[in-house]
Length: 111
Image (cartoon, rainbow, N blue to C red):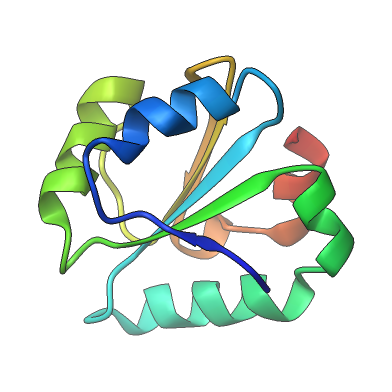
């Protein structure tokens, strides 16, 4: 599993640009939340190497980088949740889900 680490505000512009070529997945994770840990583990267990060809994945530790999490909410007009998955296509959020609604099959069906 080779996810990009999202830790700088400048990466949000990069995500918008990349999403014009291939969908981008952002996983917002709270290291203080057991539900977030379960959702992250479930997603990692299901992730396949070939999924990297379908979608560019990013991982955000929102406790360490709350400024980035806040900006995601503004940039993509997606209400903040944790854990949260956001799919970006052509610079816009086209799907988001949170908590136990985070489901590998749903995610891969949207990319």
